[in-house]
Image (tube, rainbow, N blue to C red):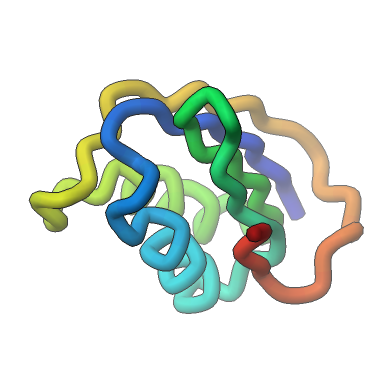
Length: 91
């Protein structure tokens, strides 16, 4: 199991991005959370298999949705902690 922490910047708030991230994570069987930050970025943590996380990191760019524009994605990888059960949108 592996963990990725990512921060997305661009047009990522108020456009359904957190919902999109949550749907991707659920589809891939990942555990973690996604949250809007005060600086306009979106912070996400996901844990799962290396293959599922690779797919997740490709999907988080949301290239198929014209409302969402991810300009930059900062990713940190590490070992899973197991702290999450399911994937949650933090409000």
